Length: 70
Image (cartoon, rainbow, N blue to C red):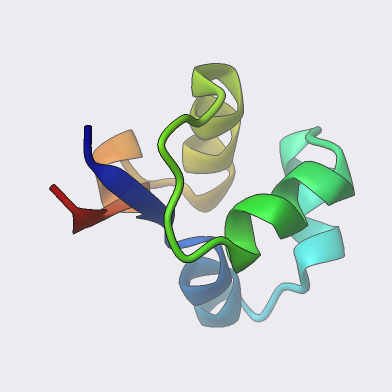
């Protein structure tokens, strides 16, 4: 099973948003956003949260995910 990293911090920086702003705009708990943003690699991610984040950043879900280990 591969590990993925979410590009939350990169995308937030591009928009000039803080992680708190991302959480508020996406309707996701701040603790979830910070966990996802700080993780170097995760095996599982909440798909609903991914959809909300992708919608918030106006990107495809695939653009939000970076594979860090296969």
